[in-house]
Amino acid sequence: MLISIPAMMMRGGTSRGMYFVKSELTATGADLDRLLPALMGSPGRDQVDGLGGGSSTTSKVAIVSRSEHSGVDIDYLFAQVNPVSGKVDWRPTCGNVLAGIAPFAIERGMVDAGPEQTDVRVRLVNTDARAVCTVPTPDGSVRYDIDEPGALPATPVQVSFGDFVGGSTGRLLPTGSPSDFVDGTEFSAVDAGVCAVIIRAADVGIRGDETQSEINANSILLQRISSIRAKAADLMGMGDVRDSVLPKVMLVSDGGAAADITSRYFVPDTCHPAHAVSGGVCLAIAARTPGTVVASQAREVRTDSGKFTVAHPSGTIELGITGAGIATNVTVGRTTRKLFDGQVFATLHGVAC
Image (cartoon, rainbow, N blue to C red; front, side):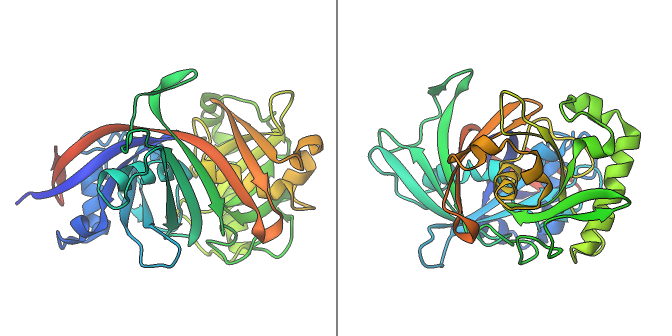
């Protein structure tokens, strides 16, 4: 027997995911830890039997519902489906997939569109962070044909993050210190936007501006990062993280002329082709936290200017920063494209659409 579920596929920022209305998923009565991998085609590295794209950045799910919390319109629950093992990680969130939440909520009638633009207040269920997503609705509906410089037409989304500190561990600095050492390597554990282990690229033997393919071909580097991550997670009180994408790892270096800092973001065992928005938020806050690895590497002239730019393998992310400490707000612009809207038909052993 096939299970039929309404779904939408969207590209949000540098990720791609499947978006579902929560009540339509729960109405199936299926265990989501089994159903979501079946929908995405996991386990299976290429996910050819499902809607995933064979990588962690394309094997993502957003579960969306109207919120019952005061001052919030939409609850957004994120699920990361491991393409190979098929395990579902409910601990992290995703800032790129977040970029599609407002358009999806408007299209599904959860939020009324304004005449020019629409603000959608979102609670990120996994970490209890808050964000306001602003999407243009020039004719009272979402348009995906707005020209963006250097990119295919899409809808631009401005995302403003708040209340994002300590979402996974309860503290900005999970170890209680801005920096610690594992196996002789200094790192900073920072829980803001995403829970991450941040290391100087030079301290693990690379420049920091290598391409994604160069890094992913360096098996010795990947093994060292995996070892540091596991031991750092233990110091952070996270226990065994072999089956979790958290904490993420970022290798940072000088930003040169183009950025305040250069980063290589891991998901969690290989280098991301670009960079997670949540990772950019984490770096922006870490740069303003004295004693962290990021504060020692970031270009000081701009970390207090209201803008923070992160260079990554595919370009740069520019974030706007206002406020200070736990009252800091971080704003970033993303784009979203609708790729598919219809029904998916799944069994717990495969999927057809």
